Length: 335
Ligand SMILES: C[S@@+](CC[C@H](N)C(=O)[O-])C[C@H]1O[C@@H](n2cnc3c(N)ncnc32)[C@H](O)[C@@H]1O
Image 1 (cartoon, helix red, strand yellow):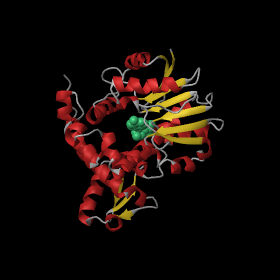
Image 2: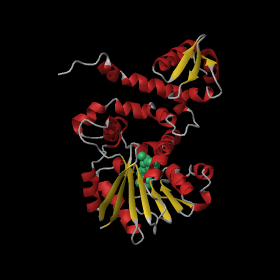
Image 3: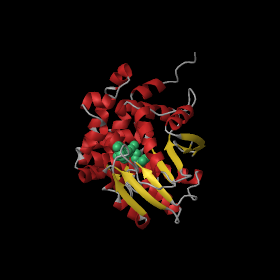
Image 4: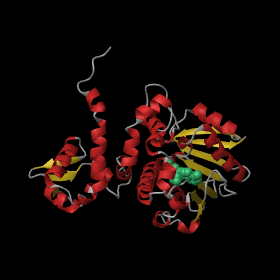
């Protein structure tokens, strides 16, 4: 057996410290405060209302990790990596960083052992309910999560649009589309298409700004509801990004059946998700799978598992397109 590369295991073991350090910097908005150039840690402490010495200790740790750069006089700048935390980053990581350290999510991960022992959601074990119900009752937490989803969809959008031809569709229904970041990018890239954004009422109520900023609000209807009841009808494309991985097979089948019932003749099912890779590859996807277990008692799926799920719901798996990013486009057609 090869010797352990020096310190690598301990870096993995202590990874929680890095997560929380980046989370705090994101929550304080440090990256945006550095947009116009270097600032001292004292200036940043005054701007963020934090204790100067403690903030300096956070910033120097982030500089040692390559997120910031520290120069003479405790002056800090963003590195190219740290620039991904700016709110105007093309592929923003800040909203996700702001979410992952929030108490409800962090505490659920703190009970991973429960999930591994039982196969059940640690979130439900810790908080007594599922994340959707928890957030529906807590608007501030819901807003942090919705921004995180918008950030992740912005990160994925260019690669998805480059890899998959949405140009043949006229009415694209985004099922569980959050606040519309991906649908807005698809509609912006395809001016002849119209969209329908569908999600829970308290989620779509925050979508107008995202759609307006992309200049697609006139071509996009916004509909509130539950995909377990029904989804908007007569789309020729039903897009589900990061939806099926939130649910077990029975619930995921019910969502797909809702799409099947509503779909126009010859319509397409466009599932955008991670696909579990062969053994020893793609840790990001396998950790996302654990994230699904911890939060929802659900899972990421292999290609074969998607094919099986599609078949149960009345679709056949037509194609899987890698995007070069973390997600793939898994296309289904009515069976
Ligand atoms: C992981 S997020 C993905 C959001 C978006 N598709 C994206 O990738 O950015 C899952 C979405 O499912 C929505 N959702 C959960 N339960 C739902 C329900 N019963 N009906 C409709 N949407 C639901 C959530 O509000 C959330 O926006």
